[in-house]
Length: 383
Image 1 (cartoon, rainbow, N blue to C red):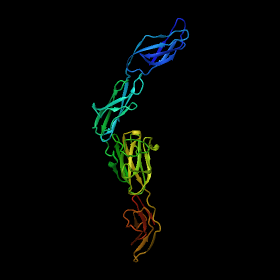
Image 2: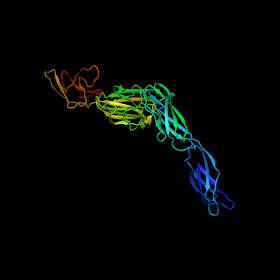
Image 3: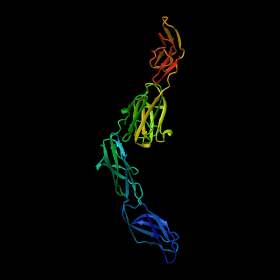
Image 4: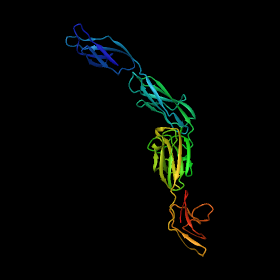
């Protein structure tokens, strides 16, 4: 508060200083200005009643004087208590609550004291001491499904009044693939999966996906059917997604796949994510989708695998077989081929005679042989 004393005289405007006192306690000293006034800022008065006097020490041509005692009552400063809690949480997640207590205008200062947290009007843990106006509850993972009210009741120290605040939290059943160990298995060269991330959490040791803290991740597992390329995206998801791909068998020991993380895909909209990278046959890939800065919604994951068929066989030659009616066809091995077919035709049309081979030679009664190599996704020829 600001204390003001005015010293006046019929002989002119007094000069000098004024001392402000609370009974026998000096609160401060100030010089008179040109209007004969002195002001003093006081913040040390305790809650309660006080008798304030102003003592003028006199000046050139002016004698000293003391004012009558002014009764001043100091009340506790009002406070505002705010509670922070996640709006939605999965029933298996460990969560805690934060209370922030501040002085309400015109009060000032940082409140101290304790906060008692409550869940649905029942005390949760012991009172927590404020540190710089903030109190943090212990964690809990035992909230049942439904809506719960979290309350923080502030018990003040000297100088501040009590207050309370509350917030609501909705506990939901988390998605089935919330945890790494419960990832959804995708198979084949093309797959789509849709999951709500509402209620999902983030596991201890889980990395930040696409360089963002996120906080509500879900997981899939996909095994590459062959070596080639794969595109994975979150097009048509309803929130700002984070997408990351890893190898590894534990959530805290994952290896990021090169080119396997993305926060925004401009080609599909800034809220979606897309990655394209080379894969190796039989490799197990771990796919994580999270929400940028904690966003949640419906995640739609799409996997599309493609490969380049093996090249046509080279070094194809034919020679006499074991008898006059036999021909021996040989060729060079083709990288990526899983088998070979030799046809008695100039195409691989159904109904033409053929023989299959797993090595690089075949002996049979054939005319006009045409050699085809096989792969999981295509067939090519060489005459």
